[in-house]
Length: 110
Length: 110
DNA sequence: ATAATACTTAAGTAATTACTTAACTATTAT
DNA sequence: ATAATAGTTAAGTAATTACTTAAGTATTAT
Image (cartoon, rainbow over all chains, first blue to last red; front, side, top):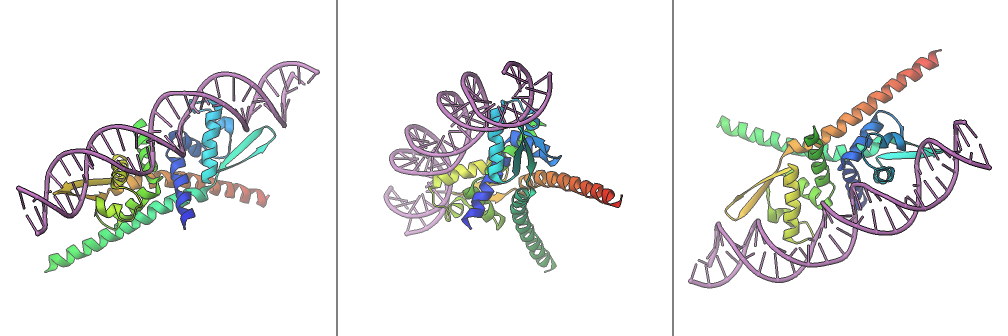
């Protein structure tokens, strides 16, 4: 599935920026407006908008505009995709170590 | 800790490239030479070297050269750092949802 | 109606990324 | 000694990124 790889590209890339992680972090504490997201960040609003767009394209964040304020919220499904990829590899790696441990145990018996 | 943020930048960025994820994936199955890592990738060796460097700087991979072959292995500590960051946010988000659920349950009793 | 708020679009720029090819350096095999 | 193998370094390039400022557009408050 080529699409899956591209999705991971986008999610990991989205998380690779400190400003975007601050935004995600804020959103785990509840929905927020663009202005709210911008407040702790030392950059212009347009810059925040661009980060928001990266987050939306990655699927990590959804937003809707009501009146003149856009409300953003996290979409945990995307977060889980990334977490799962890592967890799968870690599991594989740990299983490998377990097998290695068994082998060593076998050896030491002889 | 500013350093922690920079470390996350590097790890997530390292994972944001499909070629590098293939390399990491391969390494979870055991150590490999640079040539081994390059085999499944449709790019030049120098390109692989550059990806390897990104992985090493991120702390995800360590390598040592013996004779003329460099052997690479994953460093799961860095993987865990990234996984943990995501897990922490997900937990926060889930806790928030639980509280919301309780509130709604309270409401429906009245 | 006017002004303030909350965002949005456009355009430009410096830095970074992901490659490439060509040339080179050790190490091991013959 | 010569050649083959495994990796490395250097230099160049096209595309992408992370901003910026300036100039909008709706919405809401006065």
